Length: 182
Image 1 (tube, rainbow, N blue to C red):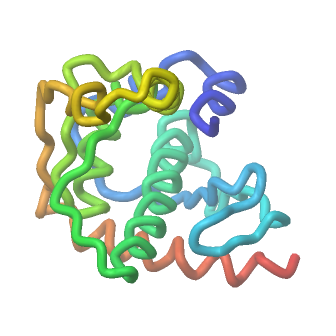
Image 2 (image 1 turned 30 degrees about the vertical axis):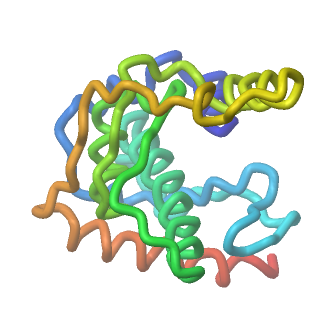
């Protein structure tokens, strides 16, 4: 939803302004809470914010901040999942944002996890719901219907950027408590 919102406000392919090579973190920070936030804050009233805007903020730096903010929110979710004892060594990304090579590299690096890119990535929740409906309606074996996607590429974390993104994530984490009572 956030990617759709941003694309509707700006241009169709925001990530093109970033290219494909990962860069050091943006000086701007974006909290992607457009309609509240679930994990880990469970705060329906919190709203999105840009922090650190300056005279040099432009389309590319704000796009980068948006992608980083969404990725940091994914990291929050991953940390909450790990706190339950879950152990992940890779994940699959799909949908519109997953087509950005820059974002693929950013997610892998910030989450410190390998990111698998499916050969056909335009499936998701609706496809999963259709599969579940077919299983339930026809009393089918889930293992026959729910096959793992064919993986076209695997992106690994870029170690040379991990320290700088770890520092940026620390700044990101300080913003929620700073604005939550405003």
